[in-house]
Image (tube, rainbow, N blue to C red; front, top):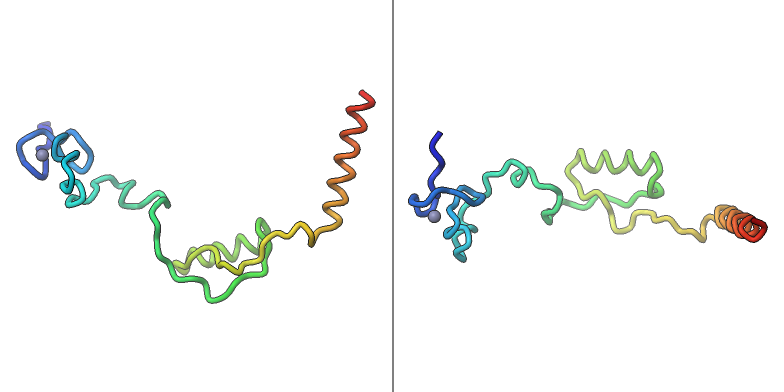
Length: 116
Ligand SMILES: [Zn+2]
């Protein structure tokens, strides 16, 4: 199979992405005129800044909860932004019992270290 020629100059072998030759690929202004031929680039890896509409309203479901996952799935299906700026966030002050448990655990670990 013959190697593709550069899409821009049609002279040099296309040795760089976007089926461009080395010199065209690195010449300012040329690369931008040719869309990427990579299927990964077309699909996007989620690195591209996309503008999606915000969900109609925030959710009270806490991060990591099954309810929040369901909300995220629904938003994704609707093509909406996954996170609303006013979504509920984990507030550790709202969980005094968790904090107490963490403190007891820490004390137990510390005392076992001292004892050991
Ligand atoms: Zn070229």
